[in-house]
Length: 380
Image (tube, rainbow, N blue to C red; front, side, top):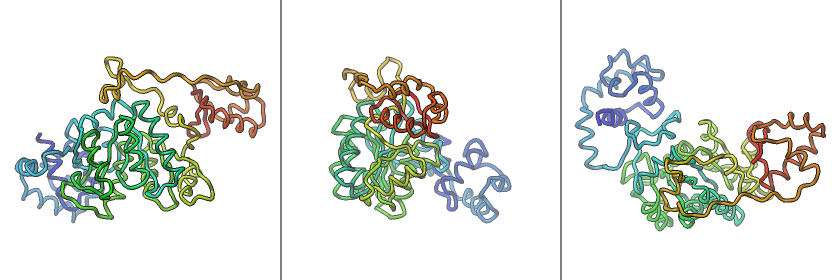
């Protein structure tokens, strides 16, 4: 409780953003220790200069963290700080985690993030039929494998991702650029209410905070931070979804993109991501294969099944290997569960690189192998 009070108190100080707050905590070990440190010691933290340090010392003299917390909790009872066990550890890994995280809905979903994989699904607010279809299709597969779907409750791809997750009885987290009690856009009122009942709404802004253009790019870092991987299903060259993808890459999370037609402006962003090294979605199972084996909870059920009551769902049948040409069979036999580079395959097979690459694409489309970063391949 005491450390929670110091997170709140420091978060109210002018001149301290999320990056500096995390540095402050890392430097002193706890924010309570930072609160009681000498003023000169604050200057040892990278990013805190003489001017900011002086203001922070003055600020500490005017605030009682415990009294501030007692008052603040009366107005805002539902929030976490990194000092709280409920705060998602995955989110705190990023360089600029929100010091306050307000919630509405099912808070146990945040705790499930360390038990099951989570994937951010983002894209344009005006998806084509193709973008809508693949957003739904990929989301259905994620739900079938008990993956938590994270998105931003905007129009378009976000809405389809959340809606399909709920329609498939899956787990979803929506990150807002407003307070969790605010509906934006207004057309999402029905979906907002459904997520409040069956999922989890999160925001770094307190209740009553209205929409603000500056909030939404900042919101994207939380989507990326809560996700072990981010997939962009359709996005033009200038899209907030690309910000989310870039942040995910910066945080060391996997980035995937759905390829589209060169004639479709809504595909330019995804094609650009693939050109920069994002993993290409080749079929329904690309994401699932990359996520690997789902973690299990103690009773043998997956955490997702325990949370949704789907423990009696029939297991997904393993794919049946279709007939393969001699070349495809030879390439597949060379690939194991251990990743192997394209160069390594070419060397072992003694075949032209182009021929091996073409065969790999066929095997990926059949769901038999998966491509990893750095042109490495492994058996699915």
